[in-house]
Length: 112
Ligand code: SF4
Ligand code: SF4
Image 1 (cartoon, helix red, strand yellow):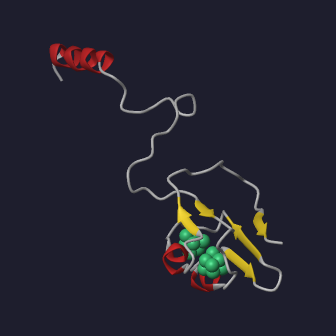
Image 2: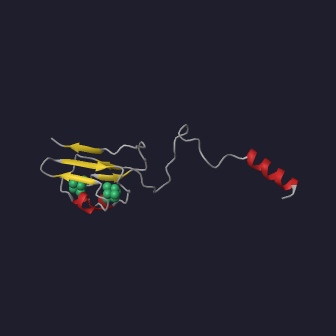
Image 3: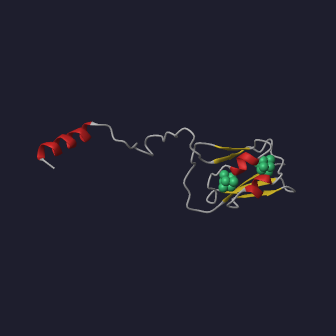
């Protein structure tokens, strides 16, 4: 590459804004339509177990007798099948990806 052309390109990249953001110092902007963390709202849930039966990765566990709903976040692939099948609109996919984790722990919600 000729020296002049190389200098022109180097100057152009030095003067332009970087295509990446300074995450985590700069908050991440979600892309419209992107799928993030599954959100459970226990108010309407009837613990019918439909979401757990539909989940392809067995990430969900629902106990109807104990009124307990749980998720293993490391198993969830954010496919949205459980959101589509829930008859009570208790599940939604947010655009947030939550806090990264290296430990496997099951998140549980229980109604009294
Ligand atoms: S499908 Fe909906 S109502 Fe049924 S257990 Fe799952 S979250 Fe609750
Ligand atoms: S989004 Fe998909 S993988 Fe995640 S809990 Fe729901 S059905 Fe399972």
